[in-house]
Amino acid sequence: MGKLLVTGATGNVGRHVVSQLAEAGLEVRALVRDPGRAGLPVEMAQGDLTMPETLHPALEDVESVFLLWPAFTADGAAEVVEAIAKHARRVVYLSANAADEPGTHYHEIERLIRNSGLGWTFLRPGGFAANTLGWAGQIRQGVVRWPYGAASRPLIHEKDIAAVAVHVLTSGGHGGAAYVLTGPEQLTQAEQVRVIGEVIGREVRWEDQSPDEARDRMMAAWGDPAFVAAALRTWEGFVAVPEPVTDTVERLLGRPALTFRQWAADHAADFS
Ligand SMILES: NC(=O)c1ccc[n+]([C@@H]2O[C@H](COP(=O)([O-])OP(=O)(O)OC[C@H]3O[C@@H](n4cnc5c(N)ncnc54)[C@H](OP(=O)(O)O)[C@@H]3O)[C@@H](O)[C@H]2O)c1
Image 1 (cartoon, rainbow, N blue to C red):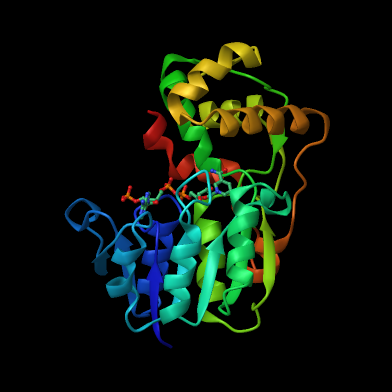
Image 2 (cartoon, helix red, strand yellow):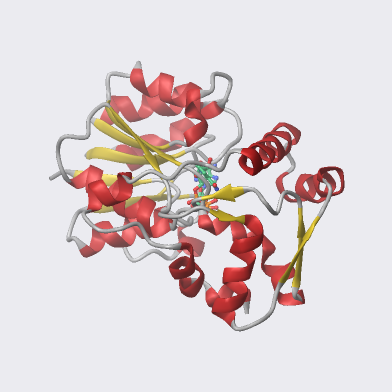
C-alpha cells in the first residue's frame, strides 16, 4: 500500500494514528509545523494547513491522507482539499457529529471533499474524553466548577478514533461512509469527574456553575464566541436528551470501545 500522510500528527488523535500505522509497518509521513518540537519517530514533512502552498512537498507520493482541520471555520479549506486531490487518491477526514448541521465548518469541509473527486471516509466522533483534560487544574484543587453537570455523553477515547482511522486507511470497503463514533456508555459530566477522582484516588466534587459565569472562562480558553455558544447549547441539550451511544467502534474493530474509566487510567498522570 502507498504512503500515508497524517495531519494533526502531534495531537490527541493524530499521534496514535502515526504510532499505530508505524507499528503496522506502513509507510507513514507526518505533517508537522515544527519538526524539532514534534520529534515524531516517523518521516516528518514541514507544512501548515493555513498555507496550502506548503503542502505540496508533504503530499508528494502520498496515496491516502488522514485530515484534521484545526480551525473553527472552513476558511482556506477549499485550497487544502484541492492540494490533497492533486496528489492523493483518498482522504479520511476527522469530522464531527455536527457535520449534519449546515453552517458548521464540518459540514462545509465534508461538502468540499465530496466534490473533490477524492475517495473519502468521514469519521464523526461525538465528545472526546480528552476534553476533560481542561478540568485538570480544577481536579487537582478538588472541585470542578462547570455548567451542566447533568449533561450526559458517551465520551470516546482518542485511541479508538485513531484505531478506526487506521482500520479505514488500511482496509477496503469504507469509501463513501460517514461513521458516527462514540464511547460505550453515557456518563454525566459530574460522573466523569467522579470517575477521574476514583482513578487517581482523590475525592473531587462537582459544582454546577451558571452558563453566564462559565462563558468568560470558556472565552479565555477557546477565544471563539460562536464555538463557546454552541458548546453551551450542546451541553444544555444533553441534559434533556443524552448524546446517543453508537456501536460503530465495536463493529469496525471487532472489540468493544474503550470505557471512560480506561481513558482516565491512561491519563491519570495528567490529573495528578
Ligand atoms: N474535542 C472534541 O470533542 C471533538 C469532537 C469532534 C471532532 N473534533 C475535531 O477533532 C480535531 C481535534 O483533534 P485532536 O484533539 O486530536 O487535535 P489536538 O490535540 O487539538 O491537536 C491539533 C493538531 O493540529 C495541528 N495543527 C494545529 N494548527 C495547525 C496548522 N495550522 N497546520 C497544521 N497543523 C496544525 C497541531 O500541530 P502542532 O503540533 O503544530 O500544534 C496538532 O497536531 C478538531 O478538528 C476538532 O474539530 C473534536
